[in-house]
Amino acid sequence: MSEAIKKTIQEGRAVLGLEFGSTRIKAVLVDESHQPVAMGTWDWENRLENHVWTYSLEDIWNGLQGCYRSLTEDVREKYGVPVTKLAALGFSGMMHGYMAFDGAGELLAPFRTWRNTMTGEACRKLVPVFHFNIPQRWSIAHLYQAVLSGEDHVKDIRYLTTLAGYIHWKLSGEKVLGVGEASGMFPIDSAVCDYDKGMLEQFDALVAERNFEWKLRDILPRVLGAGEAAGALTPEGARLLDPSGNLQAGIPMCPPEGDAGTGMVATNSVRVRTGNISAGTSVFSMVVTEKPLSQVHEEIDMVTTPDGNPVAMVHCNNCTSDLNAWVNLFEEFAVKLGVKTDKNQLFGMLYREALSADTSCGGLMAYNYFSGEPVTGIDEGRPMFVRMPDAEFNLANFMRSHLYSAMAALKIGNDILLKEEHVKVDSLTGHGGLFKTPVVGQQLMAAAMNAPVTVMDTASEGGAWGMAVLAAYMYEKAEGETLPDYLEDKIFAGQTGTTIAPKPEDVAGFDAFIERYRNTLPAEKAAAKGML
Image (cartoon, rainbow, N blue to C red; front, side, top):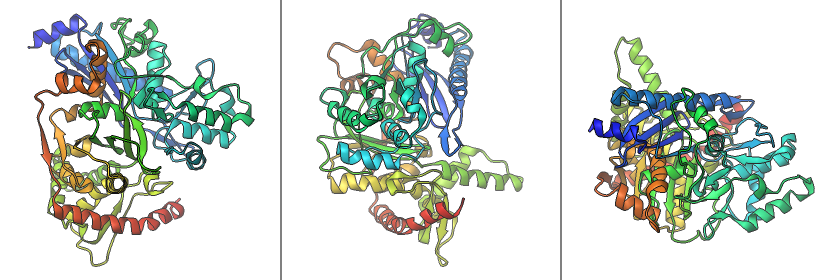
């Protein structure tokens, strides 16, 4: 088998997907059967600088090159060959944010990531103009906020893109985005798979008195659907990706996507009435809808699949960061006692303990807000734990309260989608770090959503694998073959997974927890104001 894979790599028939997550950059190389044959990783972390969550350009390029180098080292170790050519290549990244460039290609302001919650004024003014929900993390919200704040750089903008679009541009020379990622920059008209023309004109009218030299469409990336060609790796791009010089230019590249789009692909959730939940540093759910929602909901974002179908998305800025911090504290305690611990075992033990807890957490309450949380109206994060004096304060309830907290904002958004809008969902698939421990995250998420949740065998491959699949789709799709059919017939045929249905007692317990969670939110807001 390894000889066959070695030949695939040597002959340039392997496909590479690379994704910039919030805390890890991951590369996955797949063979012609779309199975991962090598992987590379690079850990990184955003920083809060001058009240802005950001990564520097140096962070980005060190991360890209480090991750790719890690992949090639894995290939050499397993197969004894260098990577010199590929059949196709694709990049994805954490969705949305703000990267603005001048005419010389210079970054005009620090990269503003999805985690920032500084654009509330812009969103409040854009929503009634567009009659469309504009989340704080979207690129158009950041742009308009910069306009409202009188930031000097705005007049000099000649290109506005996201992290995935930036990487793709520098490696291919093409200023393009996949439609799924573009839908996090500006609203999309799914009928034409492009930015909504009327809303573009409304925005230009809104800023007309500023007399900028640009029109909005002129500075946004060109929109492409899944399967379309998006350029090729240039000689300069090849050197940027692989400074060793082994990688050859000319590799076809697919449209860059966001991590929401790759999550949909990695879980076979691009067909109408399917959905997925990605739970890691942030958490979001995506449900492909049959029709538009009846009204605008600030808690629900309307984006698209990588092939342009409308998707109702509930995106929450916070998920596992506070959970991880508590596990790190328990690990430190164990080390002080002289007990050697395996981190994965520690996570598993603590997560499993939560299953024996009181279903409503026995009077314990937790908020996992490392950063602001627009879904619940929190502008700035302060992780917080509160309990009643007579609470059942034990490890099981403690862990369950933090697991519930990791899902609480998501549940609030989806209660609107499923209970008020009556959106129909045939299947929900979970992926991401929260689901690594078997059963626990899956069972509690089923309670949050009051719907069965499936974790597939390929879920651990994540978005980088999903990006590789999108690149493969561009490279090998048959004429007229849709993305849903390609995934169903060529990627997931025969795949197995585990499905857990919600338990009525868990659903009732989570509902009781959420009622107290909502009632205690003023304390979280007070903590942000008082703890400076």
